[in-house]
Image (cartoon, rainbow over the protein chains, first blue to last red):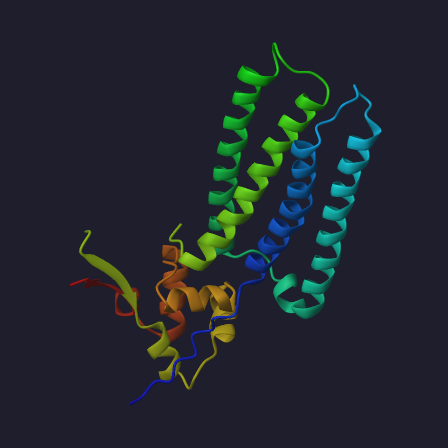
Length: 153
Length: 72
């Protein structure tokens, strides 16, 4: 008796959505922080150059995520409409735990090292923003990793 | 515990059920077809409730579908 294998290797919809979230958050804000490091805000708040860069990064994130979500839903309507199952929920829980840990640690570092004595204006904003971006990127990467490597809840 | 791994007969039992698809089995037990694929390939160990539902779908006892196998 021979059993042909049909182990479906198609990428789960939630993993595709996590790739999209990773790219949508990672690309624009990598560019934003690259700009910020190369050319730190010179003027005190409001510095319209930095503000416009931030606005552009945010607009790019929303555009990438919206168009990507629309395209994913169009290509995989049944998977998009399916409710989360137990594996999806387990992976979501674990990745949120990890992302929260990163956010918590980064916030503690910000409060201890950046906020109290040395910084103001854009430095405060950017350190907080970096914490959020890193936490979200790690969360999305964790989702992808757990779907690909396997996860037993 | 460390030298054993959880294996299952889901793929074989689907074949014996007239090539039941992963999507059909998933719909019967309440998970996605990708989760059935992950269970078959050992990437995901289902909850007890889902394991019982899978066994029920094949008319088997859960230990006939999921069991430990020596890793060596």
